[in-house]
Length: 338
Ligand SMILES: *Cc1c(COP(=O)(O)O)cnc(C)c1O
Image (cartoon, rainbow, N blue to C red; front, side):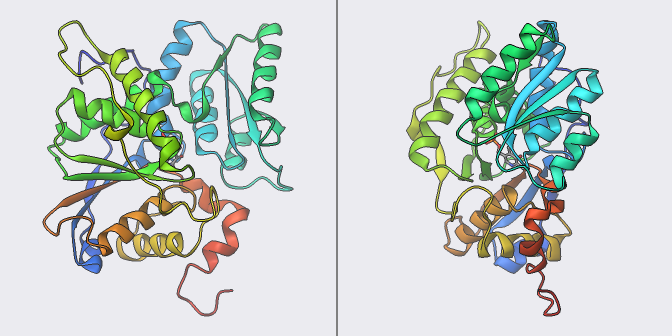
């Protein structure tokens, strides 16, 4: 698509993902005009934003002649599920370090991790980084040639995928005033920011924090966006080489009780998108980001004439996790449900 975009990539996705109007949702909110970018339809194993990043990360892994992918995440990690699927598709082994309590029965993303043949190492949240390090060294010692993918696939190589994704959106002829989405490990936002500067995108990029305060997320994303831009730079580029935390827009007013603990806002957002548009959101990421979108629209944060694009980042399998069953059943307005 863009000859200057490097590093290289392997193909795991079916791009471009569609952009669709959300007319019924826009009417319900009485403006602004809403669009959605369907990265829940990236194509591999129920979709999501990590598959874009994995195309670049797997290319790097292959260059290093790695034979196993190693990464980490929460029990219902979408990133781990997409990594396991990418490993299966490319004939690599996959080792997942899952941090949290091991459930009695596998459901949602965890069920899919098993289907894709991933090897799972369990640990507590506190022991995550140590366990990852130890597992990496053990795999190396065993001659498995492991390739370590950071949390969320968020390093400059992974984030570069979202610089390309922003270019993809512009090539679709879409120039929204705002792009709104769920931000967590920050690679998606860093890549979008790098792409926006590189391709002179005129709109605003607003991440809704899923777990961390903006004071932590903004400098992290600024550093990652800077690293991403450096990676993408070519000799004839005349772009500002760095980002400051003030260049990063993050709203952290929707984190509520924290990661993986959805409440009323997520419930309303999941219900609105499903009832009005037939689109599924997840309880952890996109439900929270959409709660932010709805809340901000009601406060009049966006202009009535603005076009706001909600970038759907995936997460669908978490809907089928036992852990969110009670929450989702109460999301219907059907009084018969408990
Ligand atoms: C990982 C993830 C995000 C957050 O993306 P980051 O690049 O980690 O900020 C958002 N939505 C879903 C569904 C995810 O799995």
